Length: 184
Image (tube, rainbow, N blue to C red; front, side):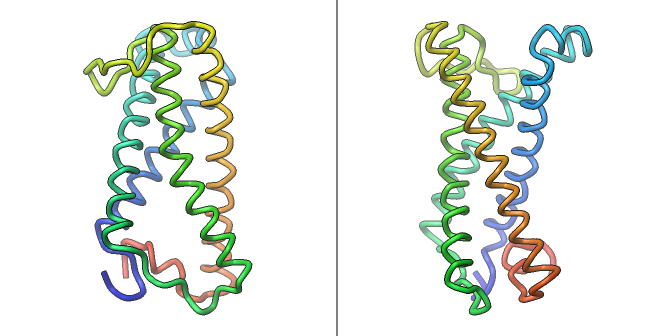
């Protein structure tokens, strides 16, 4: 790792995870706004089933990538925070980053458990994965609500993360964006 940047593997994992999370959140918004019946009416059976399958697939991939990211973070560390960060910025940046790690591990686990408890298949591409827990419709409803709240939390944290990145890139122009950039 260069002194002022994350390793190339860490940077690639960051951007792949970001794309998967945004896709999964987009599908989640469809689930919330249209519901199953609305999705069926709007998109038909095949596309609705595909949206659910690939939402679950994205969740499993996010969980695996976040665990890999956590291992790399422990093994490789992180570049030191730039001196341009004020103490409150350091606290906020660290807090948002740690909460994102926590929530991006918890969110797919909640979804996996909620899906299994609902008696639905836990899909990873065309494979059926084992459910984490037995069928329990009441527990499934509770876990899906928690999954939705966790998704809202992730969305809020992403907004803070992006706002901070844009502030450093466009206003402070202090090179913070270079730490995670794939280019330059």
